[in-house]
Image (cartoon, rainbow, N blue to C red; front, side, top):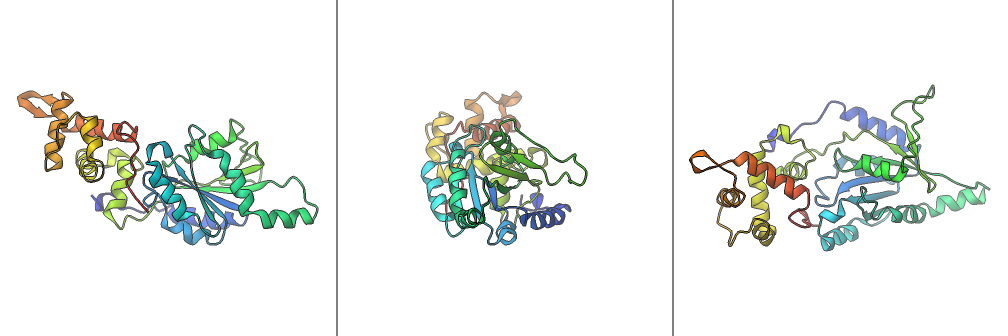
Length: 282
């Protein structure tokens, strides 16, 4: 599985260079991660690229992760010039904490500007995140249809689009192509479980089996409750068979339609049907 999802696209270097160049144009960075897989949805290069730049880490889709685990992550990540906030950018949950946190992180800079007589300071922020962590939904929510793409003016490149918000922050979007390096199989699996890696390039049946294994270890009762199993059997494949029977995914000759069960299981997990689940702990 790990070698199946171990790639590093060629435009990565270009993106890295762009982010580095654009950093000098912004006051802070907003990094978006998936709250269910906080470690796996981080690009390890971001720390290196952003260095001392004030940064807010948004733990997105917080309604799909366990609250107490997310709180532990917030405590773990919030230090120095970094703050973490639990959000759901589709529903707008937690987004109102961003501006106050930014103001705190940038208080000294703002004070200096005020002393120089600069008023109505607009905070410029770069938004980064690997694909499918919810970057677009965050930007759309913050812009509230006020997406001012200034990319078609002469001399303004498409990659530097400032998106205005009503709260005195301008957002710069970056391409969502910074991928983690999958040195650990678990990172690749976590990204695949949550749909950050497209199912088309995965073996979904194997992926669903791995997910059952993980749930057997951390959330056995959720698995039993959701699929009305009286008990869990020893192996993931035996439990997958039982789920198949319970859900009527039996084809001719009494065989289980594994593809159907795999797709259903992954969809239900991603949709939060098994309840809030955190696959990684700090």
